[in-house]
Length: 130
Image (cartoon, rainbow, N blue to C red; front, side, top):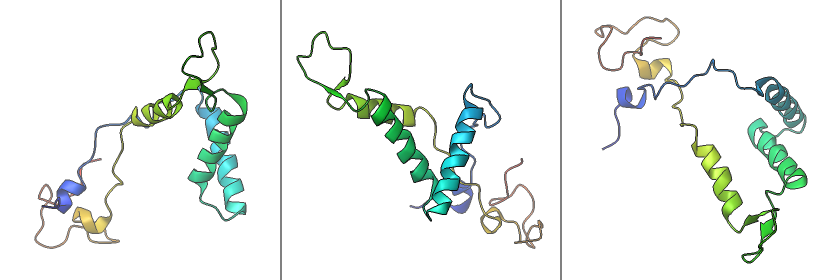
C-alpha cells in the first residue's frame, strides 16, 4: 500500500542545517565555482561538483590506488574495494531528507496560504508547524 500524502509529507529526523562545519566557507566557494562553471557548460551543478571533487582525489590522494593483497609495508592505497566502501560509508553517515511538500500536498490552497474549505488546522494533510 503506498503511503498517504500526510505520510509522504511528514518531516524526517531533525537536521542541524544551521550547524557550521570547519570547512563551510571553503566548500561554499568551491560549490559556487563548480555551479558557475557547470552553468556555463549547460551541465547540472551537483554532478559537476562531485566530478571535480573526485578528480581532485584521484590526482592528489591515494584513494584511487589499489594495494596488492600481499602489499605488506606499503602505506599507499587501499585493498581492492575498500576505497569505495569508505566513500559509501561517508555518504551514508548523513541521513536522507524528504523534499518539503508542495502547497497542494499540505492541504494549503495554492498561492493563498489558506486552507481549503472543510479542512481545519491539525487535520490529515495539514502542513507541519515550522
